[in-house]
Length: 126
Image (tube, rainbow, N blue to C red; front, side):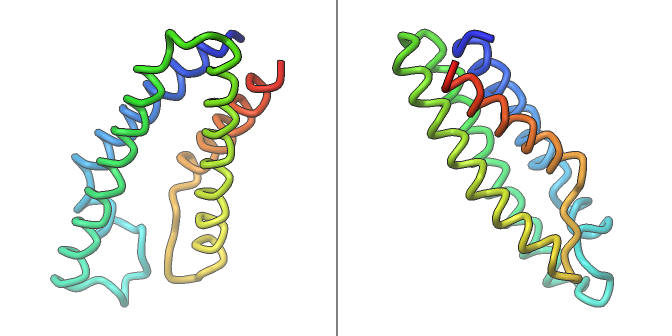
């Protein structure tokens, strides 16, 4: 796959996931992302704001990838490597949350991130 296509895919997926998280932030918090004994009115408010902040970053990250699609191959590959590193850092945090019994990251989103990480690294080296 060309680096430009991979940047398009990563950008679009991040924008779509960010919008979905932003729109569904309260439902994510109260619907199973955290152990039930942690859920109260205050935690729902704080969790909603936190998810909205994360979603805004995902949307911004997606637009960076989308707006860099016209880069030369060498620069695009450097950006894809950096995106892969960023995903690894994020996945390390997710792993800590998976180990923590009070937090329940959505496994489909984790799988999507794992795939995007692999694609970013693979495309940065081919």
